[in-house]
Image 1 (cartoon, rainbow, N blue to C red):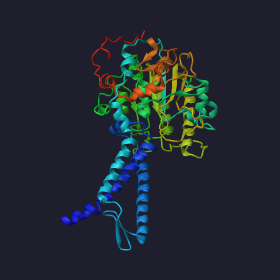
Image 2 (image 1 turned 90 degrees about the vertical axis):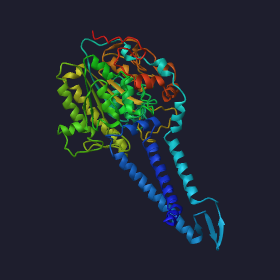
Image 3 (image 1 turned 60 degrees about the horizontal axis):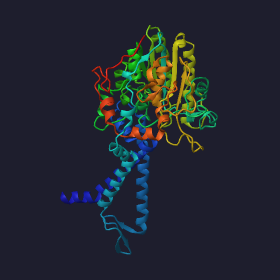
Image 4 (image 1 turned 45 degrees about the horizontal axis):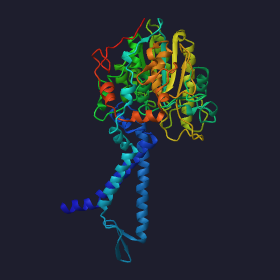
Length: 521
């Protein structure tokens, strides 16, 4: 038995470790390069909130790894076979046997070599997922939250007597790069011509003189993080010891969001999406901040809007999302209370997106056609909304949740080109002082959204965001993009203790001051 175990140790374990190393590298490469994991915090959050995710990326990843693993192992075996026909190789201590004369090449056992390869693969993981940057950030404390954070509970917000409805549409991975080069994009032919036209004809806050948008800064570069940035005015940061708070009944208890403010002011909040709302903790966030009524994949099955075994893309596709939204909007618009209707599309998700059968296609790449299709569906939906009786008193905001996660898809020949998140505000209650050549990030959409409803915000700042309709400078305009990126990446006791985990059952804000209630008069 001992002899067998020793043989297995010397012969099989090293090969297992080598294969394991290859798998680790391939999986890490797929996640880091193809999914474009922007930070270790994003990975940490995703691991903790993976429930409800689509299995398609998993299947694609398994196929990606399997094909390359088979190819690598096959190539190694082929080379070994060809070499052994010329040279007799013994792998135990890496000898070459030439003309029956043994020559030691490396004085290392195969076990030693396999362990070294495994360690190298782990080092690759360490850097691929930017764990080194995360560790560095834990030893550098941010000052921006203590200095700049404006607690919305202490801000006087005055809504008009007749409150406007809000339809807020988060479009997956919608960035301005998809536009034509004529109007701020990088494509010869626009992938989103209808959205391009909407931005030209309505309010578009831009970083350039043409169509542009806000920067997706640290903590706002994936879906739920982008949503929180735009609706709470803060980046989504994850503390290793407190990451479970995002799946508990205490989801960012210190934050005070768009949903909280609108609920306090008599709005009914709704959230519709095509996947399971439990993914990434979206249900926890929306239920605990504004008591949103949620319509998701499981809701659609329960209401028999789709068959019990129906599963397309991440649940149900965007064509159904828009049709179900029309039905719900007709229903809720009959209520006396104003509504906040939030939508999340998914058809432009990496890797190649989803092209609905009802859409026309124009481009060679499937992912380009996914944008082109979403543009058609969204344009048709906006036209429908404009035909409804409730539209006159409704503001529509279309915004990307973040930049596309597919690396290398949008490429500009202009080295100075900056990728930004698309935005357009339709039927706003007010006009902007200036919309072009602004330096801002998606966090500024928080107070800007409230202002678009005709509400007045004392000081024009909420959270870390600035009302873009005002003449106030944004955080980036007052400092710099590099400074904001750097500060958001650092550890913050204030964020962890006062925004992420704070208990607001008491009637005081994060600074211990008495809360001033929002003015509904």
